Image (tube, rainbow, N blue to C red; front, side, top):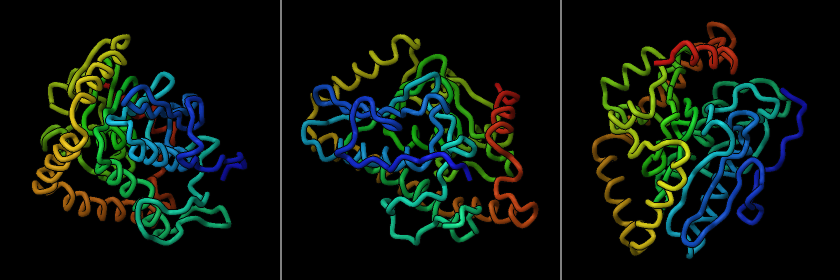
Length: 303
């Protein structure tokens, strides 16, 4: 465990345009929530995750905000969950937000046991993304550069995705012996055969491919990305808030009726079987992979 000082998770009143690890600002009826760990490719440690949740709550509670944009500072949208930066804080306690569960941290700083790992991933990964999917206001993910593994979870929990032409995507965690990231929406956002292909190969896929497969809504040149998102926001802010909320609710209900929520619960169980099996076989729940080896694997997996 690193000795780095971990900043406290930010509450809604603490957020500002330059606040690390999440920046927050509004313009008219739009709230801009910005991932702000550019030195670590916006890898998601706990302080970022809880601060992101606080930013979303701030936007929901602001009656002047109709649309939320999730974007990122730096070269990349997100490299995924933090599995190796100096500020990795899986043992740091933050009050549970997503669901009622026991404390998953360890005072001795050692690795989490199976029960703690399950509690953590229910709270910080699966639970948070489900909260964010059900935010009662439209959320646009504005994606550029890398959107890897846990980065996909952030983008997929948004209502739709606008990507720059230099964006690329990957879920390479099958290299850990694990069936994809915790928020397992793969078959629903990619279709079954594409989902199997990207999981079985670990390959990257481009923004153009993601558009062709129906995972993203628009792909534009990098220097036109913000303008395209703002154009869509302007159209949506002309709609009544009730119409936006009920339309979002209606589509999400249809997706759940197609089985996504139940399927996700089932796969989450297999995900944790994989963690436990890795731990039993090698003493490492990630199957011997770390941030560097995953990055190298992603480089090899370019489409």
